[in-house]
Image (tube, rainbow, N blue to C red; front, side, top):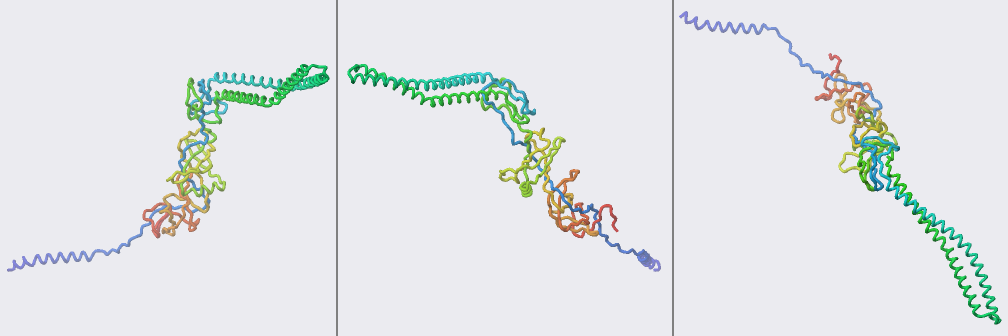
Length: 417
């Protein structure tokens, strides 16, 4: 009986002792104070706001063009004797480009000289003839007076019965013949002006034809009309050319332009500057060389569906070696704006909001976007303006994905308590 009681009571005592020991251990552990959650401070970069005058810049892609691209063609029928230039070479007005065979033109010129000599001789002969007619008319009029006196004497003798009627008739016939001679001579004198003008017209035509032959002779030697660069050569020595056949093409290196499209959102500013006569400069770097240009005009025609209008820039530096048709990136300086700041693109949230540091918190400020510019290192920066930005403000330039008003931040390099 005693053993049975021991077997039942002993496990209960062991279990109770274990529970009591566990309870004592739990109650004897040290108490820890509860941890409080600490707010995170986001590290950001900030710059001081420095309002001032800033020049907006517009990046454009332009095509090199020229309003003076000339196609030189043949004016005569001739053989090509020499071609003195090649594509890509430069040429001045004193440099011969192409020589044509001038022998046929010289033959035509000799014919024109002969025609001129003939008409000059005809004119001289007409002048001599006219002077002779004037002199002869006076003598023939004097002779007519003599014949008329003879008619009077013959009539007087016939009336008195001393002279014969045949003598009177002969005297009258002589008078009629002399009157006819005087009339013919007078007519010849009256026709002198018309004959002279006709010969002079023929002579003028011959001179014009000779001048044309001289001009054709000059055109057998082809020279550029300006300082330029050859873009195409279409003939070789031995080719037979006719009037209108293309010889070569050349563009004026002093009239090189850049054609670029101005976006519609910038057209108002650009057009206003042109109307005020304010020069807008542009620049580009091509093959390591700097190109400078000035906005000259806007085109009068806009293609349907285009996002702006073409502008033409007159190249002022670097125009002698640019190739027509090449595409270059151009930076256009727009009219400067006042009370503006420049910031990295990451500083702008949406289209019109930035953040400044207010104590340890972010504070949003609404801004106006005025354009873009580039720093000296080539970094793209935005131009902003706001009446709520002051020179003492620290503008956050780090773009935070969770940026909201009141977010705790710390500026890089500063300690947070």
